[in-house]
Image 1 (cartoon, rainbow, N blue to C red):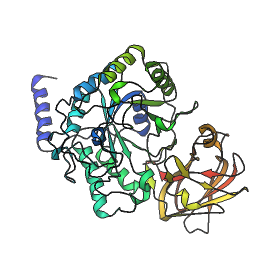
Image 2: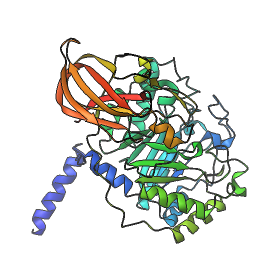
Image 3: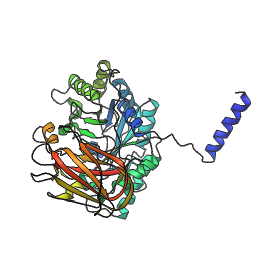
Image 4: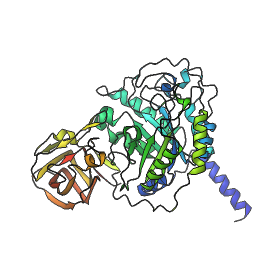
Length: 472
């Protein structure tokens, strides 16, 4: 290529940029995105928000006039992450109290209304990208200050939710990982419709993976199942799902900084224990996210700097780990279920999970088989091809037992457009284990889906949640 040709190409490129024709990034397959995420292995969960300044969990209208971290240094955070061998970060852009670390057009309860004023999300994304680190953002839908909570959702509240998500996914470049909290467990995926939120994220950031803190150890309405370490959640030995675990090792106000933070680690939770958890998670295709809490001046205390440096000297990625197994047909177009009926048990629990703290309300059959569940999608829909069945998620007895009890081992699936004439699309058998059940079949047009449960582990079938959809 001669110099003249090169100049023409460069001129055309910048002319297109000037005219607004920005080339769209190549959309990757879901399997590619999951493999790339899992290869990052180790990340920094940066819990920094108004709770770092004394607000209580979920406290509305906490005074933000003293928010003025004059030493805030996102480059320090990024350098510390690099020293540990981390590959990405996740920043709590808005927690349940509603305080935004960016200047949001949808509220005055944000950093722009404090003496500090500067956009912290921008500083974070710039600093981490400059160090070659991927960027994740955490966002709470529950917002106590704005009054966004269960039973309050209307058009105006949805405008705030979608507007703030749009700001975060439009103004800060490519976002690799978007973590939502205060959604499923607080108000459910129906009141704030999962399909609308997911479609918005995919439109704005097609290569962005999504997690909602459902605390379910299965891929229900998300790309990356999340294990919350302080609740005792941990990937099982045979886990092959691309997943992530959040871990706290330093004293603080829950996940956030307080006066206890600079004084030391939790008992018996030093470098060696973190190393053990990190390497175990790595072997189980689960990214390990270590919570690092900036203080009220906006910097990490020496305890974090030293801890991360020591981890970096000891930990190296296990390059012999096998590639992430194929995750199968993953639902990318999730369909709302209008209603459900069953031959026994409370079928309403199958549609939108009900949860209090770490306890789930589940559909439980009586002690007879077969059991039949019928789902109504509200209208006939083309290209249905996947059903996910999430096992129960009780924490007692031992998690591995609780997750297995009641899990389906054999079923048949049927489809229908009129709830009278049903077509059998497959018979499915599974081993006796705690894995979620991924049912796939030939693309079908249907309004109704019938699951005939023929056998389960124990005397009855137990299901936490169902998801129906298709592959785009």
